[in-house]
Image (tube, rainbow, N blue to C red; front, side, top):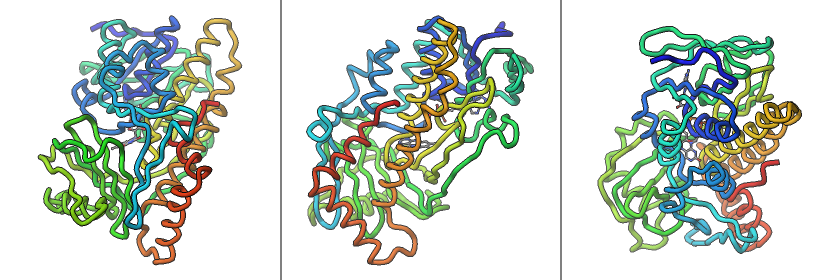
Length: 395
Ligand SMILES: Cc1cc2nc3c(=O)[nH]c(=O)nc-3n(C[C@H](O)[C@H](O)[C@H](O)COP(=O)(O)OP(=O)(O)OC[C@H]3O[C@@H](n4cnc5c(N)ncnc54)[C@H](O)[C@@H]3O)c2cc1C
């Protein structure tokens, strides 16, 4: 296969950030190439996020990749909070003037973007790990990667690292060019995918003295469920029966309340970290999505932040290559970071409000219940949650 030797924008990583950026650049007539280290099947079945904000859906529609999403995604107008033996529904449209979220798995967003890109371009190479990036401070960048057993080089005007939290692009930036702010959380999530109908039509966020639980879904037949577990927990310590029993206890809203059980098709433990790299650009190298920042998942923000970054970036490149103005590109990092820090704040709020920290006292637990009670009884507190959950404006 002949691989291009030069392009305008080299995109490292074919997760949601890299694929959506490529699609938006393609629609603006800007040449780019996407290099992905894993194979297509692996990328398409990697289980991750499932909640799309209004702004993400709007971007996917504008990118003309929302045909299946519009047929299959399930709009959600609220979430249910369970705490202290109570149930409270937060109604998004009422509190936000009409905003909502959609349940559509990240795997499906990725499949839709890959199918379109392989049909219409730009070039997308799987099994093409990037091992080095150079030239941030020069006129031209160089990307070194391997494909079909050969070492190859791609030169470009800009490199965008969409290669996730463990990618190579961030590490290729000169020492001292960026600063990383981070926090490791003292608990993890045990996540399962089960062939069982969701217990409720919306997501349930449950606070309990036994730890947090979340009931979510991927479709009308597939549930996605999570339990707070200690860091370093071995999934093998959780046979299926133990998982269902614990979910029933933590989510239970009454003695006879039970989840519908079914075969568990995936089980994994997800550690939680918050991290922001500032700035998100050095010279000709830019970072987007998880390569620049990660959030604990309770706020459902990771995928949406990635989509937000590349929407800003695609507009900035369109300004540069269209009218020759680099103003938006200069502002890229600042524009994104304002939204990123709001998402970090909200994700940290959801995490600390809902999880039981190791060594937490009864006082800590009562404060959490008081916070949840405030959301249940104050329209202002509920509106604050609803606005953040459905997504803040890009700038
Ligand atoms: C295990 C897990 C579970 C999650 N669950 C949730 C959730 O429930 N809800 C939620 O909102 N968010 C969740 N997230 C976060 C959300 O999935 C991410 O924020 C989202 O995937 C970010 O997209 P991205 O494109 O920036 O990065 P990624 O999706 O990580 O994509 C990065 C891509 O770069 C590729 N890559 C890496 N290194 C190289 C290299 N050297 N060369 C070429 N390619 C490379 C990777 O293979 C990958 O395809 C989860 C994340 C993880 C890791």
